[in-house]
Length: 236
Length: 85
Length: 126
Image (cartoon, rainbow over all chains, first blue to last red; front, side, top):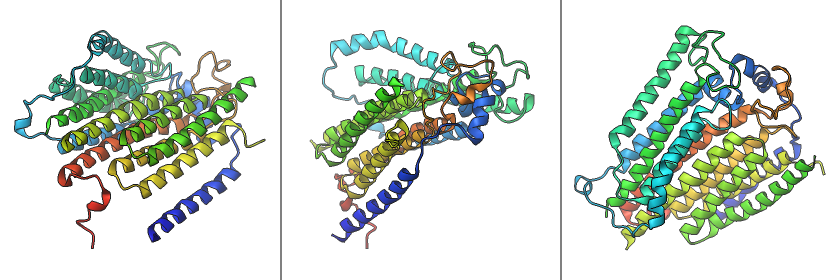
């Protein structure tokens, strides 16, 4: 009883604070401060048409580096928790028969889904999308593969190699930015005038390269998590 | 200007539906219905991001928040049901 | 009438989802339900942050034909705030990681006690 009263009190206090914020809020009509600078100068300084990409990869590149590290840690901890016993490794999951439609469609769709994911992260600096979205799309392709055949064995080594190599390349490109340009993760590694023509695929310096590695890394990590959850179904 | 009025209308409908669905997600006794409702709240949120001119966030929310999260929820639910039986 | 615009409505939706999610986390007894509550809380916070960056009547922060621009000059007058969007982008991916981690713990806890009732896990209670 006391517990319920306390919970109601907490929710009411929180709601009251939110109400105060809400009643004093006015929808903004113009940008201010740092956003103003990013919007006005971003295209010139970074050369990416998509300003969100410019912020994620260059202005706040450390944030992205930390974020893929957190995702890597999560994948490692999940792998540790869901580790199978040795005798369960070779057992197979007893499942309902997968429908003909799903199996046939997955054979046609999976390469196209992978291709679309690669397109999304290659064009992250021009159109909506980027490494995180492209990686998630690749992971949905892997999810479709797992659903079509629950006993499929994903190549563990390929996933780990893709993940490690792209993680290391991300950091190496960041350090190259320190050597060749202004600082860690600076995108002007091809020189001050090497940004390319604005709005084309090969523009914005290192951004398409970095975002491709981020996409591969995120895709590999999420696929790894899905793979671990699928494997955990084997235990009785 | 007409677009703005249309967007506001869609946003109000999305708001009502997603609040109702979030109550369903918290209250329903059946876990599978709760998980689906949470996934649909996420999907409506991605439409709201699109209305607020945030296509990048909308893409991420639609694929990760409502797709992959729901999938792993169901893996866990399946696992628990299996060991029950 | 001045409260009815997209920024205010999204802010309200965000606040209400946060309250519902928080209430679910505090009141529910089933661990999976608590994780569903966290997931709704997460969605609410993301909507809140994006709605704070919304600028009335402006287009997405992507410089193309939709942004009526001459050279690089008045971009900042025609786009919404890109910074909250960039923050939320990473927050969603981290939210996925946190949800997956909580579900792994839930599976481990279920294996230990064969139940999902949070009140049964009272080993450290005194």
